[in-house]
Length: 209
Ligand SMILES: [Zn+2]
Image (tube, rainbow, N blue to C red; front, side, top):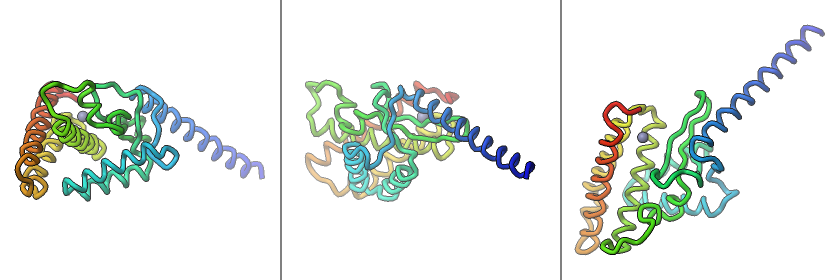
């Protein structure tokens, strides 16, 4: 009996230690993105609705499988909203102690991508042009963070995947079926998103982690 009690005691201790470390890992992740992060789920209907809008936009881009992968991550509690993430980031991938892996989306960016990209309305860019660029920016950022989640450690690799994602949609029926003003707007948005990602990749440098 004594041995058995000791074994049970040891198992309880190991479990307690595991959950202790897990909580530390979770806290480390949250701290890395400015704290107050919350999972995207039914407990916050506004966040969930905003996430659904992003998914619908991805379907419009012809990116159904990508939208489904994000939904899968969300269901596994690996997709979070970060109210404290700075204005220079759409999203961030955070991993801690090999136990917790999460993609955090800046809350403003999820709720209103255009407002994240343009905190104030520029005089020379019409609202619908801003929105088109913003949807690509948010989608591209999610593709970038998913690349990190899938194992891309180098920034150069994550940006390569992000840039390929823009090019894929640019060559697809989504863009080639558009005409007139709408076509011009989206062509401008693709050029802007690609130029912006290239600039960010240069800033990150070839050896950045
Ligand atoms: Zn990155």
